[in-house]
Image (tube, rainbow, N blue to C red; front, side, top):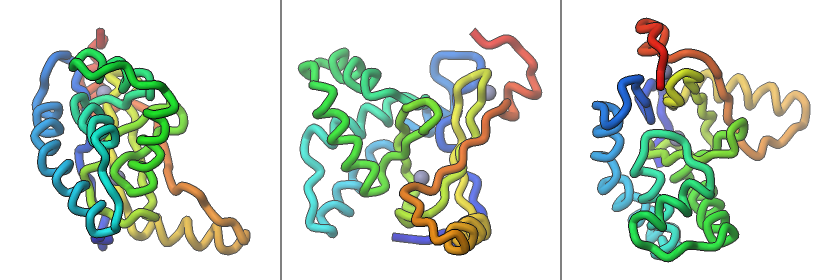
Amino acid sequence: MVALDTISHVPHLHASGHGGSCAHEAAHAARAPEALAEAERQCGERGLRLTPIRKQVLEQLYATHRPMSAYDVIDGLAVSGIKRLAPVTVYRALDFLMTEGFVHKLESRNAFIACPFRHARGDLVVFMICEACGGVDEVTSDPLTRALSAIAEDHHFTPRARVIELQGACAHCRDDKMPVS
Ligand SMILES: [Zn+2]
Ligand SMILES: [Zn+2]
């Protein structure tokens, strides 16, 4: 597990306004095989198993560049020929993937995204969510993590999750000011 020392801005999932497959989506998809292999390796290291269902759910989240609800995951898997999974099964798999740091939850949308970055599990994650195109960029910041930890400590508060969500317009949508279909 690698803690990032500096602010790192990593284009995580970024949907551009032109629809279909874009450079960001291609980059995201290209990460999938490596990220899945890495998840399997880390599970092995921790004495855990990336069961077929856990792996299928993670693969499904890598298949798109937008956050997915549990039902989107079920639908996506059904389209790729996997029998319709019960929601509870998918939620269990998502819980496992979140606990192990392979997936994040966007609380405001009740949706999930795969995280290919090997940051520490307790790291603060900042999501910048574009309200126009639905794209999401993920950023981690050590100074921000420390600041938030200090605030929580001052208040004797134990955070379950350290996620900050910024809603707004991504650079692409802000610059283009184009209606997005
Ligand atoms: Zn992450
Ligand atoms: Zn946008």
